Image (cartoon, rainbow, N blue to C red; front, side, top):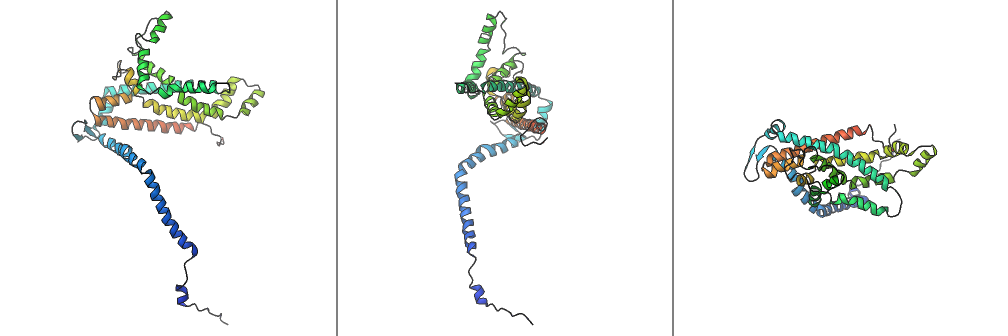
Length: 325
């Protein structure tokens, strides 16, 4: 026995209304597009600034790196000639690389050690400690200014305060800025003096370490050094890694201090001719803008490689709470 068939008229199907949610979906898509347009209008000033002052200049500098461009005249495509000259025929370029690496390798560890030591001293609840923290941060606020660099040059001048103190102690005055053995150390001391930014980051990390861990270690008979080595340092390794990367990048970009202290020439004997200073000399003193652009991209590559190596090696000494080892 066959099952009864149900007849459905074509008119009834055509006259059916669409599901109630379909109209809402269409309206929602329309509102979504309008919201997108509104959002883009709000961020349009930033987008315009990004394209005009960041993305387009970056693209132009990459193009200039393969040209012979002197700002005042025309340009000529030279291919890899700027890079070949940089690595094989430019003696001062090698000196600038050496001076920059010496500066970074000495100043960054000293600054981090000093910042961590001050942060541990200020990690207390004593009265007035907030004023001390603000006072120690002031050098980092004004450290990049021309006025501080000029003050530093006067401080270590032949008749400066440093030699006055040395003379009062019965020591011979030293030509700090004119001696190739001491000139770079004046820049290192200035970098160490500007320890405020990593200090605050270290202080924030120290405040996150549970005090119960120190109390448990004290019950077990651990002394101060053992607490620092077994609790403080391992839990601070992410903060140390962050500061290390940021301070290394900042060290490679140092310019104002070296320009003022060395008189804009990297004197004496190019010992203070850091990379950014030599790039400035090539671009704005000898007007070799194409060569300077090539130098800038090489610096970007060096910083990128060192940062990548730092991230690769961080897995061996940086410990996070979520790590299972």
